[in-house]
Amino acid sequence: MPRLEIDLNEEPHESGDLYPIDWDDIVEYDGPAHQLDYDLVWDDGSQDGVQGDGSDGQLGGGADEAQGDGAATNDVNIPWLQGAAAAIDGLRKRKHYPDDLKIAIYLDLLAKTDPPVLRRGVTKSVSEKFGVPLRVVQAIWKNGQDGGIQRIVNKYSKNCGRKRVLVDLEAIKNIPLKQCSTFQDLANALGVKKSTLYNCFKEGYFRRHTNDLKFSLTDPNKIARVKYCLSMMDALSLSFNPMYNIVYIDEKWFYRTRKNQKYYLANDEERPQRTVKSKNFIEKVMFLAVVTRPRYDANGNCTFDGKIGIFPFVTVEPAKRKSPNRERGELITKAMTSVTKDVSREFLINKVLPALKAKWPAEERGMPIFIQQDNARTHIAVDDPAFVQAAQADGWDIRLTCQPPNSPDLNVLDLGFFAAIQALFEKGTPNNITEILQKVDEAYQNYPVERSNRIFLTQQCCMMEIMKHNGGQHYNIPHMKKKTLERQGRLPITLKCPLQLHNQAMQFIAT
Image (cartoon, rainbow, N blue to C red; front, side, top):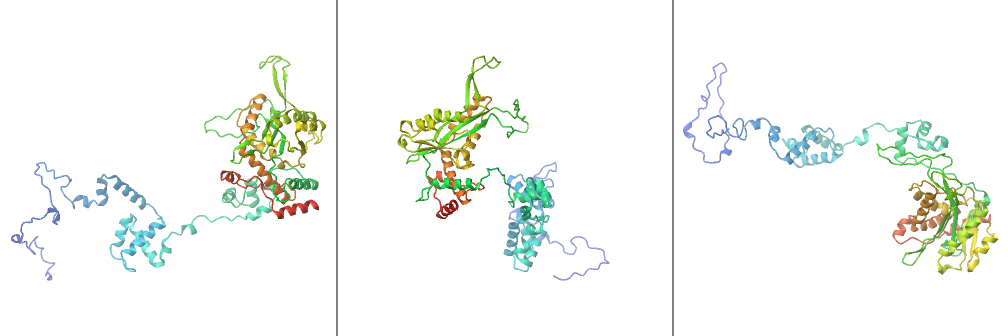
């Protein structure tokens, strides 16, 4: 194209003087109108000057294009497009972007250019594709060229946030137990904040322990406990006896209500109003429970639930005087305030033995049956003449034995049965002694047989722990997932004691 001779001192030429249009060379155009490069104005012949659908009468590159993409998008009523636009707007406001998005942007840049030269227009197209600002795309490209993917990903997990407060948790072992009962006391002893210590507790750096009191044992008590465990074991196979011929008896108090009871209430619900005449004299009844191990057939069906009975220590007598609740002479139930040796003998002879003989499996009649009791002073001697006479009558061989002193863990009732029926009993709300008797009997009868059978296996685990600790009582009750094994049909009847543990127990009682 030749250079133009222009003198800035001269007056400018009129439009068309330099390059005049030759109208003779322009011919008619037969193609579609949208391929022309002119701004077309639609004229529908109206007289009021309204030009088509647009406000300025332009199609395509009119005022809508001049307003930008935002105005054009707002005029379109497409739900998914509006949702995408809203998502892009929300993404633009973010200061930090996830690693997978930044890596995808960098890979898209690499696919559209030849490193290290970034082609023109690539950053803009990638920015519009992912809906992120242009500067973010440029920063990702720069960081990627300097250090690769490692420079692109976020590093906030290592370098951001408040510095962690270090707590010397080993110092907890040297703090007296009296200062370890609450979070506040322990935090003061460690010299840290309570919230910091609680965060360490939630992360599992130390644990909460509920400690219970146990009987003190003498050396003869420990030896007696180990001997008892060995007596429950077969000397050849080192497996524990199934204990089908052992009947456990023990007494327990059941109170009408607790002094403190936990409930879960709604926010606007009033708290329950529980009242008694005296907190120190809440109505209670003592029960004598008798259980043995359940029996199952070859198919796993229960043939004997092992529940001999539960007998309350109460008396029934006529009322001595009239009251608003009853007439004079009406029979009322009263709890026994004291249980003597004579009362224990009467219950064993007149209640326990008849129930035992009535419910015991017929095929096991004539075999030795041992009734195990604890060493309470109100219990009768194992060779009590009246009991022996009643126990040996009618061809029965029933004997009375005592468990080792201070050993509630060797009685299935104290080991788990009483705690279970206590929980079932407290689900009811008895108001008097008669209802206490009814609720306790329902809890006893409704206790599942499967759980009762598991307690006998737990006792065998406890006996092995007793031998491990040389007759001691400070051990954790082991768990063997009995429910899972029972569901899989692999629950054993007895457990086998390791030979090394058996030798250790034998050596302990020998010394």
